[in-house]
Each structure stands twice: as C-alpha cells, then as structure tokens.
Length: 159
Ligand SMILES: [Zn+2]
Image (tube, rainbow, N blue to C red; front, side, top):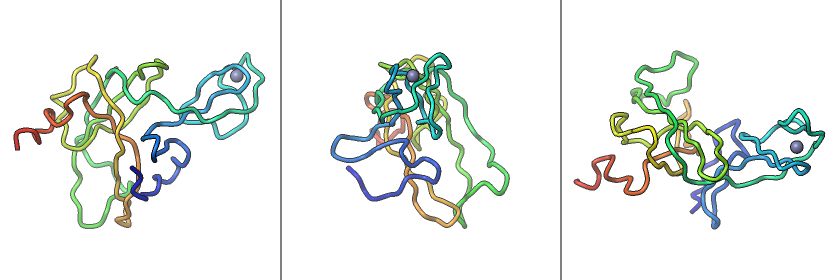
C-alpha cells in the first residue's frame, strides 16, 4: 500500500503506510500512557504532572466523528507553495474526533468531497492524501473522507 511518496516536509514520523495500513502515529508516554499528536519533538510528557521523558509511536484510530469543519475558498498568499502552472482549488478542512482516543485531529478533506456534503457527527475515515510542492513534487499527507461509501459523496458512484 506504499507508493514511495515521501512525507510532506515537517511531518516525518507523523504517519505510517505499508502492509499494516495507513495510520497516524501519536507519541505515547512510556510512563503514564498520555498521547500526543503530532508526536512531541522534545522530551517530556504532555501531562504536566508526569515526569516521563520517553514516548513510543502509537497508531491512532483510522475512523472518527466529524467534530467541525470549514472550507478554504481563497488561495493563501505567497510564499505558500503551489505547483507552477496550477490553479488554486478550494478544499475543506475537517476536525475529526478519533473513535477510540477521543482526540480531535485536523486534516484536509479528500479531494472531490464538496463542503456541502459534510455534516457534524458523520463518520469519517483516514485516507492517504497527496500534495504537490511548489516544485511539483508529490508529498504524502493524510486526508479524511466520509465513510462508508465515500464515492457517493464525490459523485464518482454515478459517473
Ligand atoms: Zn506521561
């Protein structure tokens, strides 16, 4: 299930893909079990009452509930990266409460899902996403999409 697309810069270690599937990776405090996403880059537990210094990677739930969302209709100003010769395409951002952890994680909604199809409380699933850098290079990120039956939201099922 890996296609060799490298993680977007700054997100290395935030997710895994491969035979075990695509999943976000939190850091779990080895002392108290507290989770952090993204994983902490400095030693220390997110719980100020814990003195744990180490964390281990922990795959997070790949489904959750849409907690909130918004749409981005305007292109961010430079120096925001954009591949040369492309137009800005509006997209939606989802805040998803993960099923088991009850953590809320932000992610771009998969391309093709109109904002009008989103409803707070609906089930969402994690899926690999692809960005193109300003140099036109593909970079792996994560997306959320309605589940099940994602195709019904994009119109692909009727095509
Ligand atoms: Zn801890």
